Image 1 (spheres, rainbow, N blue to C red):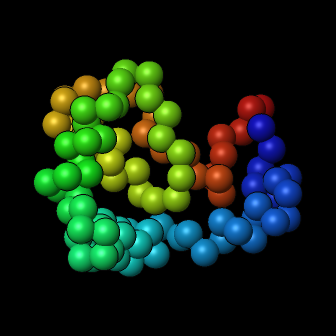
Image 2: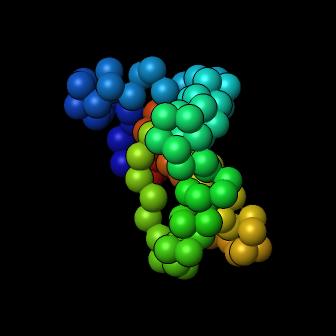
Length: 96
């Protein structure tokens, strides 16, 4: 695998805003707390997380922007382990 610089420039630009600080402090608070609860009327803890847990399997792929909240929370409830919870496009492992 190449580094992030070997990805298409538009992919680089599109993911640049999603820094760890933004994701943990603003994105999770806004999406998991405020938006899901008040705008979508679908609270994270009582609706979305149980739904995710019910449909998650040992061979589950979760793709998208975020901190990996749902897989991480579901695994902590099940006390299961997986080989990798999330990948960061900016920090791809090298294949050297």
